[in-house]
Image (cartoon, rainbow, N blue to C red; front, side, top):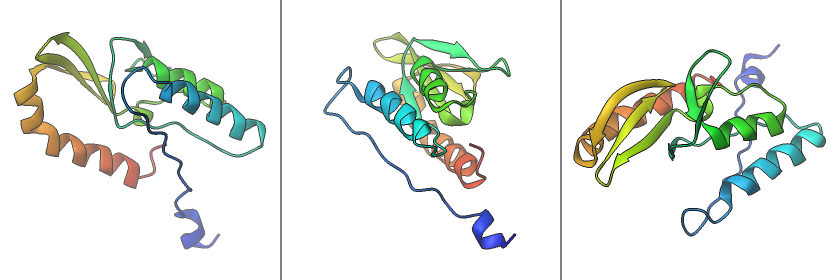
Length: 132
């Protein structure tokens, strides 16, 4: 097979909203199921999610519950590359940081922002490598 065709990037759709709890995850789940039912390969992706609602992947790693449900709607197993960064709030100024399903520890907001460039690069590498 032609190498260029193998590495072709899939078209993407972004779902945006005006704030939290406005239905972005529900719309994303519906789109995953819609495209699956049309025979189109689809996978959810949310680079960073802030939620205490998490679940475990078949590999035993932690990720956001919404992305797990979206993967199920897409007919594929959930994988941490679909939600590489999960922030689980622990206080008004801090969260437990989960990177690719593994806890990095509790970080205050300022500490997280110091590491944000590093975390962003990790997410970009996983997407460039075509992990999902």
